[in-house]
Image (cartoon, rainbow, N blue to C red; front, side, top):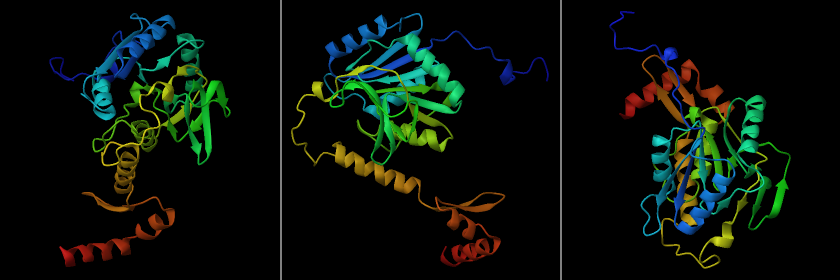
Length: 277
């Protein structure tokens, strides 16, 4: 390579000094957030090893969970990205415990991308390590670490080098955690619930808990759930793919893939498209 070339050989780039952790929260209650920050600092997440970011939604919703988290991912420099609810308090488990968990997970499954304290394994089966409403005090459910299909959004640690993103066509303050885990799975990564204990105020601290939601709003839990299902119905729909050098059919059905990825089927499919174009 010419010594005057502006190009850089990628493996020659030296990693710059970056923080170990980047922590992000959506803030509607500044007193809660100050308590959260205090608990992180006392647990060893200091300005020497951690950067903190937040969105101020105390007066109006400047960002929802999707847009706020995407912006955080774009600016965060930490090796590990933490999404933390404002009503989280760290106490008996601190930064050394979390770093030990990360080391253990690197050995157990180098392809992990997301770690959390609660999540679902299969229908009706959870993995949990939390003090929380409604679970109770110092609760452990399941054998940890447990590989899960999704991690609860109260605390999520994401490996930055995995470059997991969020769907552009979803909005609101629910299901972003499932979206992250689903996209991680599609990219070949795993999600786990691990033994990192903290206190999550949860429903105890939410104003108006138990009041009937206005179901006319597109941002209610049920309506966002419907939007989430519709999005992945589209995303996971069987489809034909024509590239410049091959043709294929992909779906979640092994039998369907075996039957339709055959040259005779390709020939029929091409004729059908020519007839109806």
